[in-house]
Image: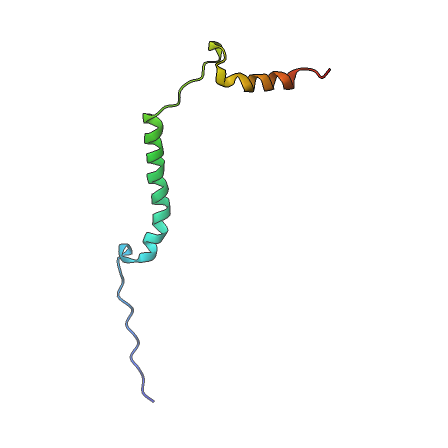
Length: 75
């Protein structure tokens, strides 16, 4: 019976050459990039404030009528 030589361990590969590492890191990296894009959009295009004291415009009339109708007692 012949004895075989023990196999040499496989050469170790740097972590950045393993494809699974990039697959695992791609999700969190995409989320971080998307959050910075969202922050940039929020800072450059702020929402306009709604001033309720100005009175109601024509576009708000149907909503105000519905609110008043719902709040009025039934006859």
